[in-house]
Length: 181
Image (cartoon, rainbow, N blue to C red):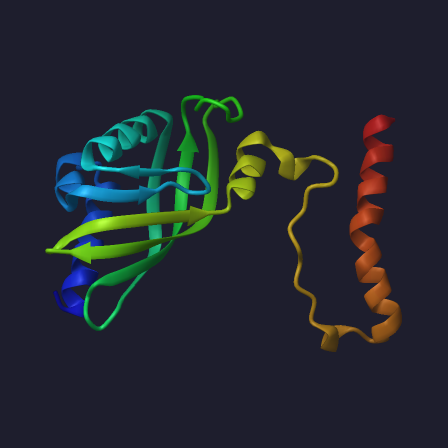
């Protein structure tokens, strides 16, 4: 399989996913497909993958956007980087309660290609980021993402670096006082 053939296969895979065409989606897999679930277990076989996708389609509504697909020259491996736009519609076991929360996650996937089909897929996204978004932790004290700072924008670098460093904890203290009042 050529590099372009593998890229086309992954494009068809995600087009079927985004279109909700599970028959086409699953037909692009080998019967013994290996599925490495994000930060979890490994499942083997198309039947296990079908069950997994049934649960996903019950609990989540997702579209994948901003897709970038790459493949090795020999076409045996491919990868994709994308953004997941999702809605959490039904509570998944062991996760926060669902009530229509939306989320936006950068994600990626790695593929092994065999005989013109996907033989392995490993998905990755930041699970803690997803939990923070659906549980509403972004609005609670103490949950933040790092903010890049360009030191060339600081007028007095030593002093301003300390002020930037203290801004996060300072805001947490201010929010704690306001919320407790």
